Image (cartoon, rainbow, N blue to C red; front, side, top):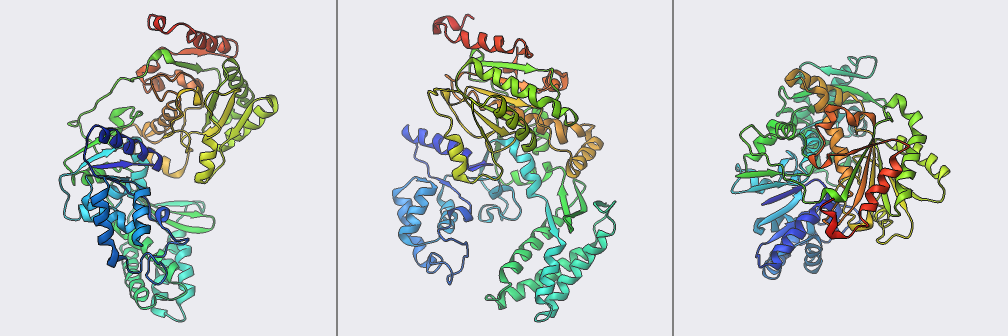
Length: 548
C-alpha cells in the first residue's frame, strides 16, 4: 500500500490509523518517508563520504541496521529511523529508502509515486506491481500534479555559468552560452515585454540542452572539488528535469516565455494532468482518491485521471447537523473593486459572532493584503479582544506556537486571522472547544494570472468549463477546507459564517455539501440573534436535542 499525502501533518492520520489497527492485532510494517533535507543529521546536506560522517562507511553498516529494525519494529516512523540511523551511523534517508522494500505500507508524499524526477524507481521502473494507492486530501493533487509535470528554466542561470567557466572550460562555457542565446532570442517575442505563448517547440533548444547536459556530466565527474560544482550541479538537474518534461509534451501542455524581474523564464506548463496521472496509476492494481472536499466529483474525477467507469462514493457526514450553524452574509461584496468598502463591515461581523459565545475562532481571507487591512481595523475598534495574525513563510516552530493559542476551556475569546488555502486552512485538528467558529471571507478565487487564464482558455475549448476549472472549483475547495476546521469530532460544536454575496448564487450553492442545508441568511441586524439561537440550543438537555 502507498498512502500518499500532500502535507506532513496529514501523514499523522495514517500513522494513527495503523496504530489503532495494531492495537487490535494487526501485524503490518509501515514506514514514513521524510524528505532528505528534513531528516538529514548534518547542518548542510552534502551526500559524500568526505563531507558527511553518516555517508562514510554507510554501506558497511546499513545491513545490520536494517536487520535490527526488521526484527524489533513494525512501525518505522521518522523517530524510529533516526534512532537506528544514529546508533549504526548510517544515512537516515538512504536507510528509509532501503526499508521501503520490506514495508507493507509506505506513507509518503505524492511525489514518490507521481513526480517524473523523484518517483521510487525501485518499485515502478519495471512497470509496477501489486500496489494499492490511497491518495489522501486528493483535492491537493490537482495543482501538485501540474507542478510535478511542468518544468522551467531561467536565462540568468546559464548566463552565470557561462561567465564562470568560459576561460577555464570554454567547451562547457560555449554550450551554456548557446542555450542562453536561444532564450534571449525568444525574449524578443514577448508581448509588451511580458510574455509570449510558444506555438511550436524549437528542436534546436532541446538539442542544445542535451549537449550542455553531456558537458556538465563530464565536468562534474572530473572536477568534484571545483568551486562551481554545486551551482553547476543544480543547473544540470534543472536541465535534466526540463528535457524529461519536454519528452512528455503534448496537446495537454503549453509552452511560454516570460520576463520576470528582468530575467527570462521558459516554462513547459501542464494544463491537464489527467492523462499522466492515469498512466502512473497503471503501475498499481487499484487507487482510492479521498477527501472531505471532492466537490464537484465529476470535475475531480476528470482532472485526476478517472473515467466514467470508476466508482464515486459520497458518504454522509458522521457529524450531527445540530452541532453546526451555517450562516451566509450576502450583503457584502468581496470583489477586488469593492474590498476597501468591506473592511469595516467585515470587522463588525467578526466581533458580533464572537461576542455571543466566548471561545476560539478563525477568520480566513483570500489574500494577505485583505487580511492585514481588516486586521488593522479590527484591533483598533476592538482592542479588548485577543487577535493574532498569520505571517508569511512561518517556520515549523512558529506554526506550532500559533496553534498553541487555541487553548481548551478558554476564559476569553481569541481570534486568529488566516489566509484561505494556507497552512492553517486545512489539515489541522482543533477538536472540542479549541475552535468553535470559522468565518470565511470571499469565495476563494485564485488570483487572476497568466497561468490561470491559460488553463481557463484550454478548458473553455475542451468542455466550455474554463472559468469553473481555473477559478471557481479551486476557490470553493479552499472555502470548504477552511469551514471544515470547525467540526472535527462527534462532540464538536461551532458556527461557520460565509461572507460574500456570491454564496447565494445557484452556481455556488450547487457546490455546497448537503450538510450545509438549510443555512441562515444574516445581516448586520440579525446576526447576533441567529448566533444566540444556535448556542442557546446547546444549553438544552442532550435527550431533547435530537427532536429539535
